[in-house]
Length: 221
Image (cartoon, rainbow, N blue to C red; front, side, top):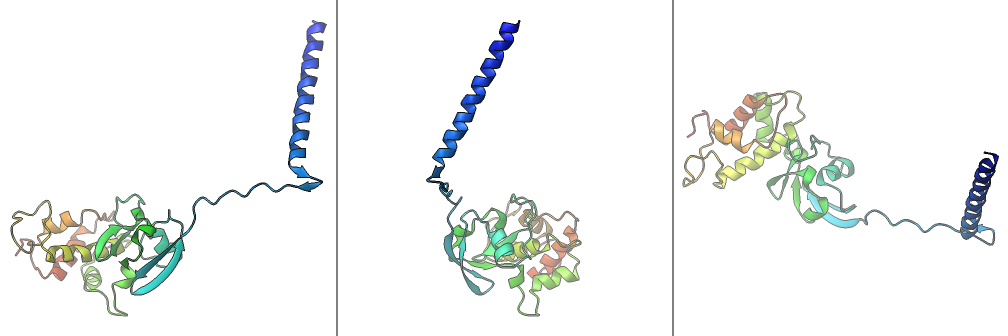
């Protein structure tokens, strides 16, 4: 029993000596003539990329991390917080903006991909103190409650009305051979389905869009 304990103590001491030697050698490798050798600097996770954007009529020259989304760029770099971060997965539409007059989810859009693009956010729809017709209509028809989704709703509606003017059909369009689609309630709901209002202000949203579209009833034209 005592022999076993002696062997165990010797093994422990041997291990301790080897470990100490390793630490000493490592410390010598990290020093040179008494001066500490600096470890090599770790490369940055990603280099910045130069891009140019025209946002709400203003030109910007920027250097951005290539992983930066348009949403984060607008909110954190350009101080345009009107565009909201909702799900950050492209499912709620709160971050909808216009890029070259087309609506996109800015949370899924890498800023570097849109170098040279024309971008419009909710801040850029009004002309000074004069609201965009859809902004005014949303106020008149109470197309919002908490208002968090409203910037995305309005930007999406602006693009949607342009799509209708261009003759774009939807999944609920009854006759795809017609020119300008009759913008019924069903058409509006389908075309705006990518924008979610958790407060349930949909009746006001539909009414506002119908007013601006120039149609007065939910039965179509």
